Length: 322
Image 1 (cartoon, rainbow, N blue to C red):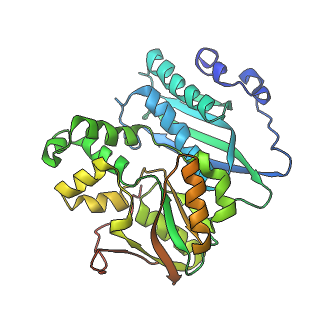
Image 2: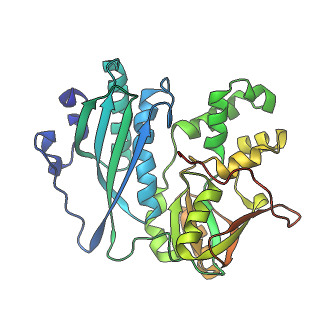
Image 3: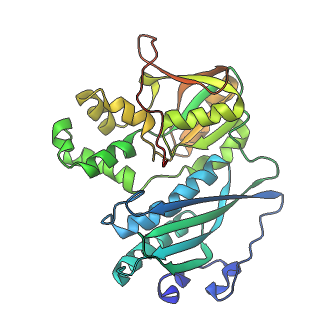
């Protein structure tokens, strides 16, 4: 099974064709090794009937997003896959197809891993390895009072897509077109890691992380690590046309947008003198960066401000497993 589905993905010479007990990689000269891991569980992070190729793709991309937010370029990944008794060869083939296509697209080959049987749901754990110049990994700590808060891309699409995936009738209630439905659900199924601008982050930002558990909650994590506070302005949070249409139909969608998670965009802070250059160079790489707020002295508190200047009360702050 490993030979059929996963050996073709192990193109790095240090993977030894998956015929050894371990792999060997050497970071580029003058670089530190950056390591991250994420697990996806059927019924928690993806639906059992999601297309298997998108499950494979997403399982790698959420890790690539972490590497990008640290300023690192991918080197390769390990895969631990736990499969239930009723898995099918066709599911596994399509899963490997999606995983392999993204391994090629992001220059992140399979290095090795493990495949086991489970009595529980399908569980996928990937550990990804990247490289960044010595001492230049961008941490959550490092943000300073007065820095601006920026995000890449658009926020909230995946969280709204998940709502639509759970409740097909919601599309009609929100008045969304078929194309808007496809756009939002597509962002849930296959996030877009911002690897294209990873190399810019060590040059321009003071702190960064990716948005996995919600914009508000993840900004609170960054602020706590940096011992600062933040205000973000709801009207400045970048939205896709589809998300904007959903919000116009139901203002309560705002909470989903800022707390729902699964955006896998980069959230960063930067001195005001650096933001213009960051936005310009990111745009040249096809990534839009938007300013959404500012930092101040504090102990991790974050407020979302409405257009009248008043804080918005939210029932939850972020996605949490527990």
